[in-house]
Image (cartoon, rainbow, N blue to C red; front, side):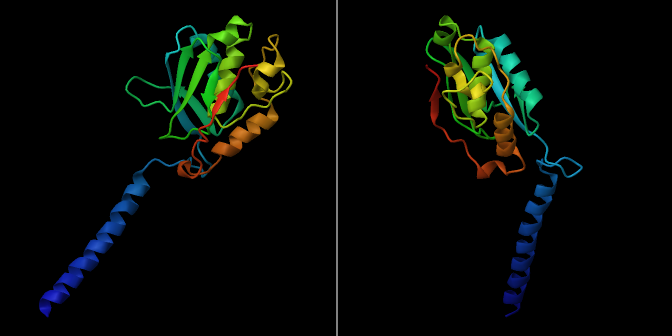
Length: 193
């Protein structure tokens, strides 16, 4: 019988150790909360290494999103870092996967030259397609003031800035919710007229 007591004590110690190790690891793991208790922005890395000719438009589109929302920040992926958003140049119509893309997940954007050949603005295209990755579907037909109106706003539209409703929807998608609770939608959004 003494052996049973010894095993029970070891079993209890093992359970306590198993419970404490994850708690210690959780305490040292990065969190989505800033030191003052406010949710920190979700950082999403993007890779535009296969988007030759679109670099300036992508940088402008990313800067627009970063200037207009606070709950998510887009950062160019350093070499060796896995990007959550892959951006490539194609000859077709612009298209993207519908998010919201989360850390650990992956979305994609295709910046199609067919739209540029017809007169659509590169920066608006880039900002619009990134908007899909951030969880915004198309809003067609729509005015130029709505970024997600896409091609329905016409070739004269150069507005790359999301309107208040679009900003609010992105802020809500990334505002304090655990990443695992809201995976990407995954639908493909093709932005042909």
